[in-house]
Length: 343
Image 1 (cartoon, rainbow, N blue to C red):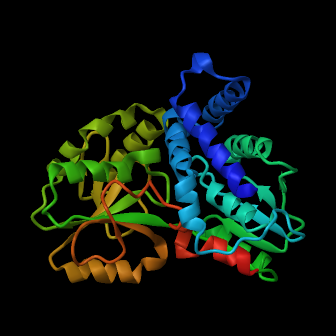
Image 2: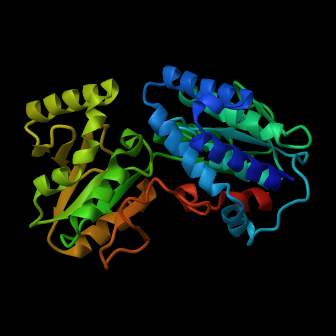
């Protein structure tokens, strides 16, 4: 029954995204109000970004996509078994914890959800919609603190991960740390491919773990060519939070005498590290592709996606697809559904 309810939720989202607001039902009006409230509560959650996230879920919940994902799993016959899963969700981008919630419900667990203060409204709105399409009480609750759990999935920073590992060591758990994504340019890309890379960089203002914050460039590559390909993303600098970060990071780059290129809406800074702040991209220049392969191998625990088309890359994602994950693109490469079914 939960599968059919998820399909109905997907149908609702598809209809909502394609329907003119003047023809909204009462349920659709209430959902629209929740979206507006979310934009007020978190300045990074623009309506455009929320709708983009919803469009990805509408596609994922299509019957064919959902059943293709589930064909290799044996699901329980009913939802809400006696065991209770504690979920601690991130809030860096809209609905980032929804995959964990859906996997928990599909695998039969009851769930206690500690949502992020940055994304508290949207998960509740989605689960209210799902509950309305479920034939009995959907086994979930939102809590301020986890107190009753038989297993835990927690997402946080590298600092909180150490605390989570200790605090939840007595139960089965998945603990996620900070990750980011990288892109590798070979120098043979077309202008269109570089444009697509812009999706990986600027979607959600670059705040997701699947957003590219680190570039690997061949020696001959010209940075102005990259910025030119990203012309359509210049509007990001009209967002006050992004603009403030851009100005602040540019001032820091000048004061610290960084080797950087100012694209006027993004700063490309030559730096070996992975995690760049909003409005910045770090880049390294390579002579030998093996340098890139070695770097990725040494930092694989901090890398979520590798965007690119170079032949020497393994596990690469085509440019533009980082923020279009499929059901089986599990965070940190850990099969969440398998974990829940086996515990």
